[in-house]
Length: 244
Image 1 (tube, rainbow, N blue to C red):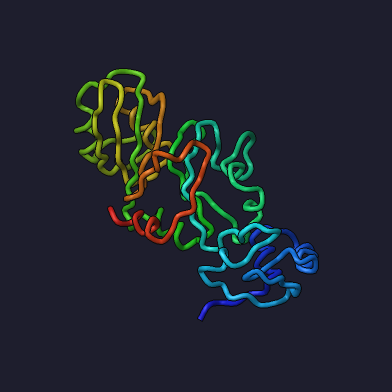
Image 2: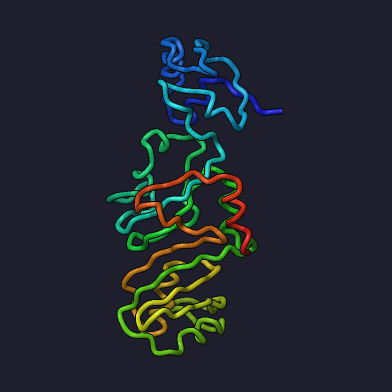
């Protein structure tokens, strides 16, 4: 049996406004279910998967229900934060989505100067499942380096013995694929602070550009422009864990 909630609570939690504002929309006939106006904002609505296609607010389909997971193509120069100065990833989402309850959170972080695949979700259990070391969800990064590779980096990263400055335990093995003298891809399962940049610094090089193009078995779509996002379905979410 589907869970049912009050209409005003549902829409308020999706960011459409306060309960009083939702009640006003209902009285004005701006909320419709299967084409029929819902004048009672206190009516209980079943949270069925097809509800966003059946319920409209001001002639627009209902936003995705709680349990939302997004794939966003993060641009360089945008920060994964709610509070820091400058452009934030949440500013790339519809204004209303920043007021959802439960709120959307990034699944891990990409630093300001890193682009690529970033996940956001309001599902705390899913978030922790993805980032848990037990899940072994790998992440692949495309790396542009300041200086040519020496040739021993692949072996050094695969050995599982590389130490980062200021840490007391070595990195887990990292898979590296050399593309040319200054470009490579690295796949890792850990998520240490600025890990890719710091591990190449430990190898005597400097990362000039960094782009994440895969998480688990999910690739960044080639037709998704920087700054845009897609809502993930169950099959795509399952793909995150398929390669673990």
